[in-house]
Structures are given as structure tokens and as C-alpha cells.
Length: 192
Image (tube, rainbow, N blue to C red; front, top):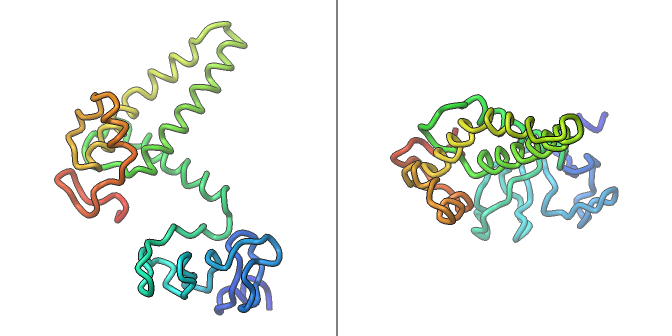
């Protein structure tokens, strides 16, 4: 039986390296990932009490501790980067959409991607042209979607979009979790 088939019938496997693990082990013998992160079919272990819970559970029914999101498909950091790029592309597709809400992950991945793109454009521009023309063009290209994602992030915090223009307070709102459930600006983006 192949490793993939074993995983689908309930064997315990490591989400990081994909190795099948003995139930009595405390860490993955191949890569050292702790038991709390292992997956069993559609079940995982609570990272706090170690009891088996459903993979989609946000709170452990045994100890009540909120769960961290599990790595997707064992891809680790590459899956996180792919998800981050999906958030960036999603924000760009909403180029001038100022209605609705932007979850924290969408906002911060968008900001990170724009910073990286502008840094690369600045390096290339200074090498080729000896000035910042490419950085300026990138800045112009992302001005509207940047304003839109800021606006929607303020909505997720339950505030009017114009709060994005209040220095310091806008950062405080951007880093805090958004309103749980629907608010006056739309449904919870985590539930979409």
C-alpha cells in the first residue's frame, strides 16, 4: 500500500515531511515535528491538551483553547507563501473596491508584497536608470488598490474607511483582529 493510501485510511502522518508515524511517538522521527501538529485523516491533536479533535475545530472541546491553523498538506512555508500570494492577487482583483471587509491576512500579505515589489523596482531602477522612475510607477500602479485594501481593513475592524487616514490609530486598527461575524460593512471575510 502506498504512503498516500495509508494516509487516507486514518494513519497518523507528519504534516511537514509526510512520514507515517507510530501512534506512541511524541515527535516525528524524520523531521522532529511535535505530536500536537500531526494529522489523522480529518482529525488533529489539540496543541494544548493533546486530545484528538476535528481538523476544522477552532476551539478544543476538551480544554477550550483556541487552535492555531494547521499547515496545509504538509507543504509548510511554501504553502504559506502561496496563500499569501493568493491574498495579494485577490486584493489586486478588487482594484478599486472600497466596500466590504479585508481580513488581517489579506491586508498584511498585500502590504508585504507591495513592499517587496517596490524594493525590487527600486533596485532595478537605480541600476538601469540611476533614478527611482520604476518605484514611482509601481507606487502609482498600486495607489488605488492600496487605498482600497486599507479602507476595507478599517471596515473589518468595524470602523469607517476614512479611519485609514488617522496616523498611528490606523495601524492599531490594522493589527487588531477584525469583528467576528457580520458587521455593518459586510459578512466576516473569514467565513467566505
